[in-house]
Length: 253
Image 1 (cartoon, rainbow, N blue to C red):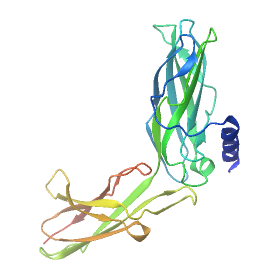
Image 2 (image 1 turned 120 degrees about the horizontal axis):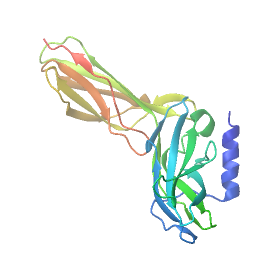
Image 3 (image 1 turned 90 degrees about the horizontal axis):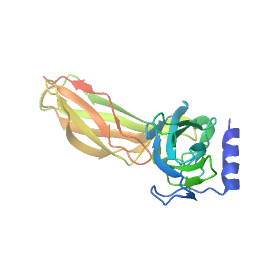
Image 4 (image 1 turned 180 degrees about the vertical axis):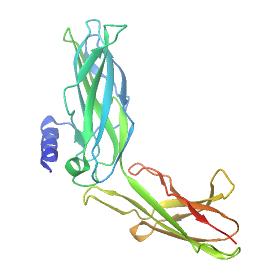
């Protein structure tokens, strides 16, 4: 199960490739080969505990002789490194033979590629493009995207029904994928906002914000005023995506 990761770590060390820092570094190269737009499909990769995710990186480049080939590799925090699942395919523009779009497919499998949670965060693309006349262009900061640990959020408001003026206790739990254990675990000390929507309303309003406790537990109390729906809302951060719980209706009598 971990064979691919072992190979990736060794390949990274052998190539001397480190984590990139920020997009927009100066490209290096020879001749008139120019790098254009670099895009990552989705842009924000949310990875759970078992399901592999496949995505593409597309690179547009041009040269007066046309584009011959491209290499694309991805670097992330810690040991994070991905190579394409197959050859990079370069296709010339139908309107400009000097310009091509080169596309690579990548697959990230939390059961194979991640031995712990360290690779969560910002990732970058390394790009090398060769032209037909042996000109080339390369940059290690061509594009950035995030790989984040999938999150879940639950809610329960009780008692139901409740008399007006009585206390409603709203609980829940914030959890996220733990790639080391292949299970979801509580995400502690995180600000999570309780929101309320009137039964006849169309939008939610913030009630109060609390921090998650042990096991990601959430708990607060409010005064019953009218029928409506309660939910928790986590805004997310660099390693964990935003998530909203389902709504729990409370009948106020």
